[in-house]
Length: 582
View 1 (spheres, helix red, strand yellow):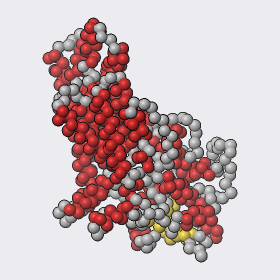
View 2 (cartoon, helix red, strand yellow):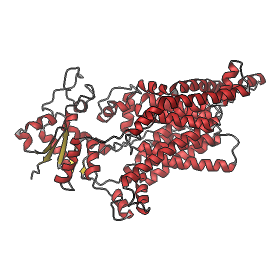
View 3 (spheres, helix red, strand yellow):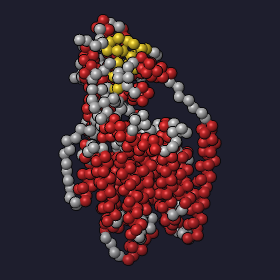
View 4 (cartoon, helix red, strand yellow):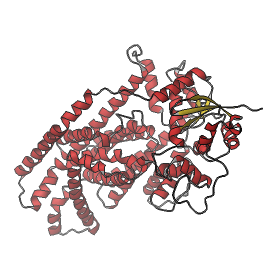
């Protein structure tokens, strides 16, 4: 966008892009969530900052600034729930001191989630305020506008938005069923979710993954007060459902895409050492304590609402519990429970939970209602004692966090780190210097993303996996690491317009994953071939008629050199040029 002659030309290049995927023109704005980069590029062009600030730093500073919005939103949510700014301060401190488990922005800056989660946090803060009682009509309307804007921006910036909002919609539905939230406000939230998602759908040229979203079906079914069961014949996100089916034990799968997710650590269960790190700052201990109290209160209130008892004696007995579960607190309780379940099952999603954990724990520690409930249970309640304990415990916790974490934070700030990967740098320089600008490269998704970024060359495949054709193309390209004949591999690569193929020793001889989860194993299973190495194989798997391509090509046998010529090699990468046969 910045290199284009004009904004219009830049947009045209994104809508009709033939420089990213070989032999295919794609609409980047429809396929990928990049409107935030489009907006930044326009902003960079119109602001008088080009001579002071390089584009990459403008991008990084904007994203880091957005993380400040994230922390402020957590601060405000905790303050709204507890009624004291000390709670917000504690939530912010916990978020920062536990940042290894609450954010990935410091080591993977341009992730879609780093754009989206700040807006999600703003949305939660706005919903928390909306669910307060006795709001003026003007306040309610302004808050609904804030919820809509934050929901829209969250949806626009992350392709997984619909799954997160489906969980949120389910939380609202549960609380509405138990009469813990005002039905009118819940209805507005359903409408906002649908309208925000549909607006994103329009901006993304009616993306089928959004049109067939389960969120739209779920919310529509709730709004019209009947059950709608749809069989969606969609393909953009089918790999996610295959992954979920296999992950939760609904049958084994040989599907390459599903196994690719299952074998990645990020999509496994949340490691237990996460809880020990969160406990170092007392966050996890406080969270479990508050969660237990609030859950007990929620169960009692739900039972009371369902029983419909109007007995005066019962109401008086329940009063002490009712005050601890106002609508905003009830929403945040079910929110943290559902996203906690998601994080426990899939480590990749823990950042949605751990940031809210900071809010929920700080709210409970600073909540008058929570301490009132505890002191009443042990018959020590007085209003003055409640305030003294609430502020004392919060200040002591803040002092402990400062004492425990301040030296480490100072040490980290004094470190100056440098990127060091000489083999990859050498490869990128070679590509820029020795291949034409129109050259088409094949290889692993992650490496080719770097090739596109550093050299601008055209790719056969890349890591944006929310497209069925691209997933199938990737599986075909990855036959370079399978047991296939050189003729088969050459035919596959040429069908995608490949001119150069990059082989990585780290994939060909992979040891990072166990047997059965190495990329070459996934390909062997998908192709019906027996895996390498000692161990069991499924009975219907057969030996391949051919050796592994990525190993055999290095022997320079005539059957390989007739199709492939090695043009670059270092300790990590081998680049082969495909022969053009008549």
